[in-house]
Amino acid sequence: MKIAILGTGMVGHALGTKLVAIGHQVLMGSRTASSEAGQEWLRSVQGQARIGTFADAAAFGEIVLDCTNGANSLAALRLAGAAHLNGKILIQISNPLDFPKGCRPR
Ligand SMILES: NC(=O)c1ccc[n+]([C@@H]2O[C@H](COP(=O)([O-])OP(=O)(O)OC[C@H]3O[C@@H](n4cnc5c(N)ncnc54)[C@H](OP(=O)(O)O)[C@@H]3O)[C@@H](O)[C@H]2O)c1
Image (cartoon, rainbow, N blue to C red; front, side):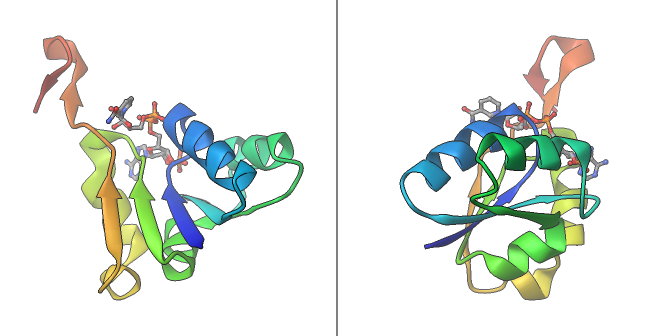
């Protein structure tokens, strides 16, 4: 299955690595097409996946996993593009935590 990972943090890395290992096609998205964190992950999976922008990932995936920073997930989803997300399963993994207030939801 084609799976989009929005987010290059440790959550995106962990889920992306497992999904590649069990045979899925994964495209990890970021604000930039060749982010350092995305390239690092791509090397860790021996190039057996793709990286790109949030929009590239959302266009590619049949299922989209949102693993972005929760305070900025709406901005990331806007960059992904409504047209690319329309009709797809979107699994929201992010939490809008407010760290200055002790990790409570915003
Ligand atoms: N549900 C659970 O069990 C669980 C467990 C742990 C964590 N979480 C949540 O999972 C999420 C990911 O955590 P993480 O530590 O892996 O990553 P993170 O550091 O919270 O987020 C990294 C991603 O957020 C994007 N981002 C940051 N600022 C942005 C902005 N202004 N606009 C658009 N995108 C922005 C980054 O884009 P770039 O790639 O361009 O830098 C990057 O891809 C968090 O919300 C966390 O709370 C959930």
